[in-house]
Length: 429
Image (cartoon, rainbow, N blue to C red; front, top):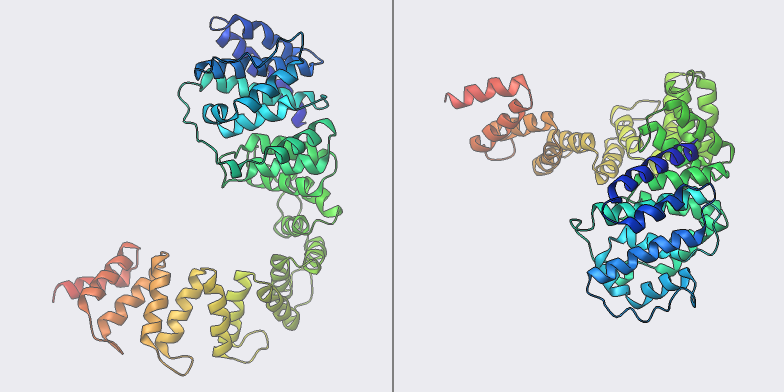
């Protein structure tokens, strides 16, 4: 499916490029036609790269190109690799990192297995050269940022040997948002190739792409399809997401029995979110008999595994004494603090409430203010109101009308009517 889309898109790109460069460069206008043949010769692709690299070097005033022998003595591939090796520093400054890596990778190929994918990469290089060459800001890469040997080997395995693991790793490489090589379309391309060959990690990633509409049109049915394929191969996170889709009726008819089956599977593989949802299933009796003990155990297991929502919920269970548990404020504090460490806003608020009201047996206004402020800074309107009350009443601290007015004002701005009314009274004093 994606391959057909890529073929169509590549043809459109080639037609567009031919129109663009017809008047600018007759050599490229003629040779770009090589990309439209049913069987593209690797040497033809490398010939195009060779011309681009030479022109880039000339634009950088690198006139000493006699190191490259004529093509009758050297292969095109050797010519390109020689230029890349000899003028690495110059090219690194002249080419964006993503394009720079592609030139190295394509030039290093010895055979051509995935023609469509390589043509797509060559088109990226040509389009950059003719569209952005003069106005793109090029970031110079630090030497340690690029491991050419690793990248070249990975690309060759993915293209020449059609290695699914290598294809998946390339998908991950282009999907890394923290780097400057993030390209969602390329990530999608390599995940598609790996998924077609049965790579479960790639199938899981495609499920995420389709579920969230990343690089593709949002489709819950396609997300379900890929999650199911990965789950059948034992992918724990895919199993959890598949269970979620059954649980919520997304892309498939709602089915609590199948949801629980896959949540059980994911939970056994230590997916904390699955444990948490099993707690909801047992507590609410969704497709099963209500079981408070099983619900509590599932929530606790999830909390101990580090899932923040379970940690917060467990705090509430101990604070209120629910699900057959004895009310224990100190245990509630423990789990609220674990959730707060992961910046759970409601945990900030509840910690402020517990300390300011002395629910743990000791009233600590300073701690109460600290936690309410943490919640308020994250936008919690009720926390802003509570801070207004504390500074207005002056219980346990000196009364501070200036601070009270500030926090009531912020609460009023957030839409709390009570804060607006008190604010008017204070301003009229």
